[in-house]
Image 1 (cartoon, one colour):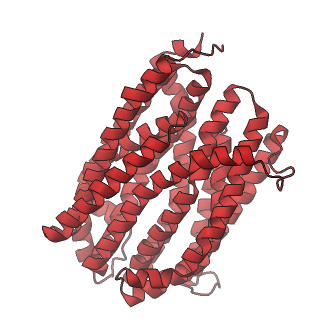
Image 2 (cartoon, helix red, strand yellow):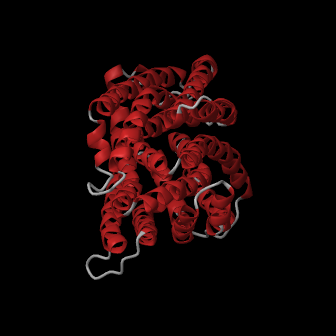
Image 3 (tube, one colour):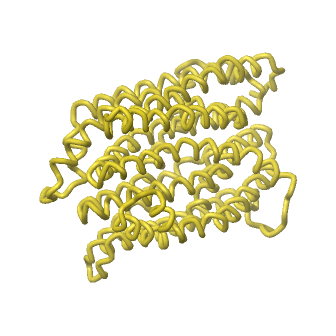
Length: 459
């Protein structure tokens, strides 16, 4: 049976076989940041506010640099369909080169973050604590980008289970290191927010070592690190042209969330802390959508390699439907159990606990609203990436998040006086615009184009 003749059940099985380990890997990776947030919430509100701001800043840069790693996944999936091991090696190696160059660019921005936070109107205590965190955590950016490149290389080849298990081990190691270094347990020094930073760096290094050893032993024919120093400018340019728009697209969205963290900081420490907690909860459920999006990228990359529009269209409908099922479950949890979810992050003896819970309940209601549009935009974006369509989605992201989302967040939050809920309503509008435009791009342009292309028949 050809790929185009796959039934809906077979598409569901293929997506879940790829997607469930990817979802688990994303959840485990997310658990590293979640652990930092929980520890800081129990350590102190000022530390939690600083970690919220510094973490947003770090991940804004991290995800911009990850564009080159994300570019590897659809390229490897397409090359694997064509059984081209040489181009798999070339693409992955140049992804590592670009990640290394990006780290050299980003490290000064992390080291000198204090003046940036101060210029953006943050309180002095948050500025000092945030800079302390980033001057340590910044050195973890290089191994983190290396991990992203190898994970996308392996995912493009459909080796997803190893990524799950390695990331789970890293999350456990990070949790233990946080417990020791943040609070000074087991004879370790009490380091507070600096301890959380060191724990994250160590977990990134552990993950990189494990995933590199696995890749080199499991896939020796690709020789990823053999003559690593040798330039390959043609493939360097290809990865750069595909990866830069991906990074900028991700930057547009992540910077929107970072920008709203700044707006929440203007409202005060309690609103910023509530924002950080609610965003962590919403991000946890988003990991499901992100994993489905990654699976969609691989499946779309396979269809692209075959020039099989029927396979693409059928698979796209299946993954969008699976995303809808996951959204329904997360919305239910946000609306029915808000205090239970929020309370996990706050010390019962914290004086500001009731105020944070009150602010957080409203934000979770808004998070329930944007779950649907957030899922729609990331899944459609993943499919388009599989087709190596990245430039137009970059423009769509810029318009949606910064032409609509951020102005609306300021308008509803400050001009109209709705505070934190108004800021989050701006997020909803920006994500809704992106979802609609990306869906239009896929169903009205990309899929019809591949449907009319001559298919490459493979059994």
